Length: 143
Image (cartoon, rainbow, N blue to C red):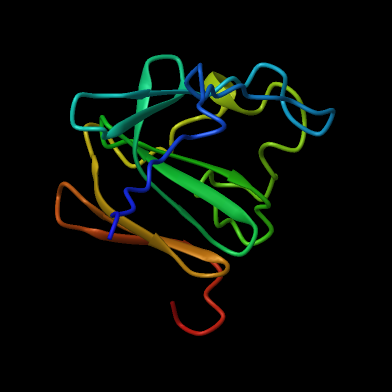
């Protein structure tokens, strides 16, 4: 009895690697161009700002924050309850010139770094390098 030996012949083989092309729309800041690079262990370094890498990110109901590789923090989005930690209630990222290098770092104190960070819907909390818990934003339920 003859034996059957199947062969695999792909019909569509990619000839170029995938690329990442950021795009902007009128609702985004045209000065904001993130880039992503991968190290030898495939761990991404995301440069959202001039030579600043993103160590972690998290989001609340209508805002986002990042902790940089230098353990500083930036937040953008709606800020109705002060959840961005910028000592005001002004939204960030809804107009040109507010993102990227224009977005300020949070003032946590001289030399104070972020060790851990998290958020709820309308508040943000961090643990600092001085082992202090700091929270800001809505305090509707005692947070």
